[in-house]
Image 1 (cartoon, rainbow, N blue to C red):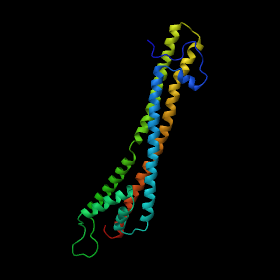
Image 2 (image 1 turned 180 degrees about the vertical axis):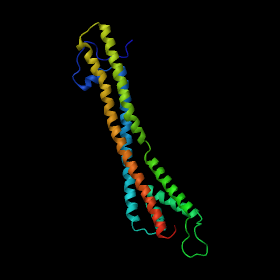
Image 3 (image 1 turned 45 degrees about the horizontal axis):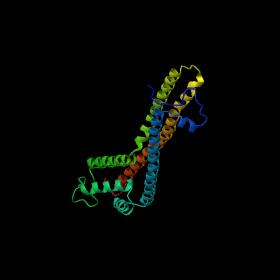
Image 4 (image 1 turned 90 degrees about the horizontal axis):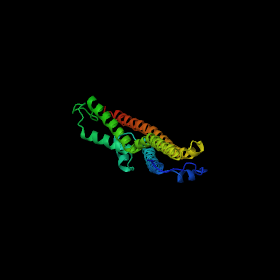
Amino acid sequence: MMFGAPLQVGGAIPSSPIELLTGSGATERVVLAILGVLSLVSWGIMVAKWLEFRRAQAGAARFLAEFESVERVEGAAGLARRLPASPYTRVTERAVQFLSSTRPSGSAPNVAGPPLLSAGQLDALRDLLDAQAMAERDVLARFVPALASIGSVSPLIGLLGTVLGIINSFLGLASKGSGNIGAVAPGIATALVATAAALTVAIPAAFGYNIFANRLNRIEREIEGYGTELIALLAREGRL
């Protein structure tokens, strides 16, 4: 039993992509429909993530520009409360929350000056800042792995459509009893449309994934560097 009815064996030779599509069988059309949905999903993710990264970058640039004049952790906390939410404001809020809820244990109660953080408390603060940097990366990375999945799965779906289309063409050739290559070539050409369509879906998705993955790694490094700056502020205050 044939999988669908592509271009009839011995029929007219397609001369344009439209004719290839209209002459495709039911199997190829299902595969093309799936690829069309995957293409829309991938482009939707890329546009949405581009806008999200753009907003995050704008918020980070504004925060860091004002952070350059900050000399105390309290000043950074004031920036976090005043400026719009961004990964840097959330990292600052977590650090301030940790400092306010941690009882310093590195100084004697009768010694003047700011209380000191112990080595263990400092390590805990570093771990907290690293964890928050990872959490911010995970938030920005939502749906980005889907681009990698689409980029790797789409060619396989297209190949499946091509193989089924070629099988269909040879079954039609056998039913007609013709050995002429011109009789089967149109059906094979139609079947190959699925592979071509799959590549047009996979290539942009793969490019988008690599671009966003690189930006995520850079953002994570920048947030970790900001955490180091916060610890440096504590050192300048004499709290370490």
